[in-house]
Amino acid sequence: LSDKLSGILGSLTRRGALTENDVNEALREVRRALLEADVALEVVRSFTDTVRSRAVGAEVIKSVSPGQMVVKIVHDALVEMLGKEAEGIDLNAPAPVGILMVGLQGSGKTTTTAKIARRLSDRMKRRVLMASLDTRRPAAMEQLAVLGKQVGVDTLPIVAGQSAVQIARRAMEAARLGGYDVVMLDTAGRVTVDEALMAEAAEVRAATAPHEVLLVADSLTGQDAVNTAKAFDGRLGVTGIVLTRMDGDGRGGAALSMRAVTGKPIKLVGTGEKVDALEEFHPERVANRILGMGDIVSLVEKAAETIDAEKAKRIADKMRKGAFDLDDLREQLGQMEKIGGMKGVLGMLPGIGKMKAQLENANLDDKVIRRQRAIIDSMTPKERRNPDILKASRKKRIAAGSGTKVEDVNKLLKMHRQMADVMKMMGKGGRGGMGGALGK
Ligand code: GDP
Ligand code: MG
Image (cartoon, rainbow, N blue to C red):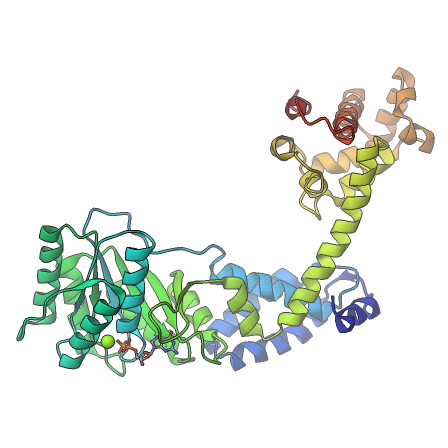
């Protein structure tokens, strides 16, 4: 942690829930960042609305300002919207699997076709055939053939005078006969979306029934991205997006716009002119880039982590020493929701994977947790430190005091005993057999 960041961490201490004012103020900044990143206006609007409703009332973490907290919420929402998990090219269909590449001219279709073909053949050991359907520019077919040689992937022999659809049919047929796994169809593009372009691509799609229709889009296009994406998706039914020129200095707002408008996953990212400049899509990175506030985001994450980790560690230490009493259990119950339940604490201890799953299954929802805390609250300090003294009469008193039944008190005590036992065992280095300790 740099000095500067720790300085900020130390100086901001406001706590509480985010007010509408906090949120609106921070969202003004966020809005500006999104627009600067070239996120389309309509997307900015719906996105900030979503975030506003999510942020107002949210708890502010200690040592973080409300503004930073909002940015963190924005960041998380952005990552979620961009698609949390990387989705690769889907080849799950009978061979030859068709992949149709569509997009505006100059977006990087031909280059990306070769990049993907290379990846599928090198990494995934698929036999790939590429075909250029760009009949308007003879040089385009030549370009793909040259790239094919470069990456060691076959291209369909060029036959003069055929239409795009004819070439596409020939490619699928050649792939069937030649035992290829994948056929990549690189279409012609126009500078702007036009009807002839769409009609041709639609015809190719109908003739070849490709399993993937990948929209190749230049990440530097900004506001136009939305219209382009809408037009292509509406007419062709895009299955995924490839964003090119992410090596440039654009901030990648197009990624968000495209994703928001089509709802289709961003599958890959082009990061250079060379044939190996193709990467998985990392929503985190793009979110940081769009916000241009990476520092703040990592600061807030750091703060959240530190706070939770400190508390969790203190309890884990006690557990390890076998000194885990009901006061600790009470604090732990309070922490549960915040750090993702018991696993937050257990995650700090080694070799506990199996038990973790069982605890997650244990019925520890909010209501149960509140009840358990109420039971502990009804105990005297002495009882909390030494639960062994809890006999029938005390239990009855505690149950009455907490509005529960003796049965509930017993359940809580059993849970505590099991946890303390397991921890003690772990402290002695014993790892065997504890998987079942909490399952009963
Ligand atoms: P197409 O008209 O859609 O087929 O586009 P091309 O594949 O011919 O690409 C147009 C130009 O963009 C070429 O000069 C490519 O080298 C370049 N290009 C494609 N993808 C990328 C990328 O991810 N980064 C950079 N910097 N250049 C790219
Ligand atoms: Mg091309």
